[in-house]
Image (cartoon, rainbow, N blue to C red; front, side):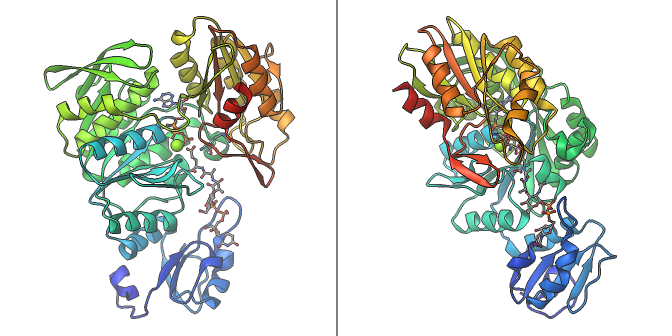
Length: 471
Ligand SMILES: CC(=O)N[C@H]1[C@@H](OP(=O)(O)OP(=O)(O)OC[C@H]2O[C@@H](n3ccc(=O)[nH]c3=O)[C@H](O)[C@@H]2O)O[C@H](CO)[C@@H](O)[C@@H]1O[C@H](C)C(=O)N[C@@H](C)C(=O)N[C@H](CCC(=O)O)C(=O)O
Ligand SMILES: Nc1ncnc2c1ncn2[C@@H]1O[C@H](COP(=O)(O)OP(=O)(O)OP(=O)(O)O)[C@@H](O)[C@H]1O
Ligand SMILES: N[C@H](CCC[C@H](N)C(=O)O)C(=O)O
Ligand SMILES: [Mg+2]
């Protein structure tokens, strides 16, 4: 492909690929040189050109010699637009999900609902790239733009027609998922997370809103969980832009949740839609999973499905890996659940989901990740102290921080908790302590397969550990 075909100009030079890391540049590559949080990509332009870059997308004041300088004030956005033209075509129906919690669950449920409707569907997010046949992990929730677009194009080549992807706030800020035609975008909720990166809640919300102000196509649909206190901001934005609105929740107009009755293994939902009342047995527990299932249904309806069959299909949803996953049964008979709650709000939601099922105590085991928002740690402790009956504070992924310091910050919120740094020992102790009527919740790592300590990833899986120590 000629560069001119991508830029709309007359550059005849042939383009063979795209890269944002100069170490991945080969002859014919278009290199994106971005100012990052760690380093300035512009420092690698000369090396990229030496390695064969034919064009460099960079800020107007960057110095580019020996290759075409594609100058833009927002070079990440310009790069994504060009890369999308290079990598496309993409699945005809593509939707995105943002929010502090629930993104992974919603994209996975959306994929399942589309599949039940007979579509060739995929999802991309924290769990990786998932199709009916396989799951491949990418490492990040929203992969870098080159990985993302090449994967999405690969899915289209495999015949995938329907794609749901997670738009993390980092991904949105860094324009990792631009260039696709996003026909519906969903908002789940907003609460504290990632303030180490965004600075304050205002900037964090602004990052998320970009999905609706810039990524969602002008005639697309906004699907909004309207029971969240911040939903109004998304609603106003989408309304002002003339997007179609699908509102979901107790205050929803499209899918109104009018009843929710927990049962032993799930919950009965009563939903009003299009003037009719629908009753659904959702095979998943917890208010938060009902919310996510309804947002997923909203996305499927927004992209052309009928309400009745879509709601009926909710009864056949499979659990999402690491989200209130029942890992094992303790020797006493107490069920042990693994959940990916790693924010105060999520921890509260996970405990609230399990509490009604515990005849006795709710025993929580959790910690907080290093190199991430430190301000949420004490609040997570407070939530656990207030909502759980017994709390163990342990290590999550310390990354490059001192694990004991992280635990101390969590313990400020729950001084009565027992501190056991080693995660396996903490899990074993909690399980040994659980009585027949109790429930154990192991929170924070969900599906994760390793514990990140420094630069090492030590094999660790909460579900396997729970099974081993409960045996
Ligand atoms: C803070 C953050 O999001 N960093 C990501 C981001 O870095 P950045 O743009 O700031 O990059 P940088 O390292 O300063 O480098 C600047 C530029 O120079 C380039 N470079 C750098 C070094 C070099 O030798 N040559 C070179 O060309 C880089 O490719 C980059 O384009 O772009 C990098 C390349 O795509 C990512 O690997 C990196 O993710 C780091 C590893 C990370 O941990 N990110 C986490 C926080 C993250 O993104 N999480 C979200 C959160 C999910 C959620 O909501 O829970 C996610 O979507 O996964
Ligand atoms: N709708 C919701 N409301 C409140 N809490 C939720 C909701 N959905 C999920 N959670 C909590 O958040 C955890 C993570 O859920 P999920 O992985 O779906 O979210 P996510 O937005 O993809 O997270 P991440 O930002 O890490 O990618 C769950 O395990 C649960 O504890
Ligand atoms: N996507 C989330 C994952 C957090 C998971 C938790 N186990 C931790 O390490 O903090 C993040 O990057 O903040
Ligand atoms: Mg996720």
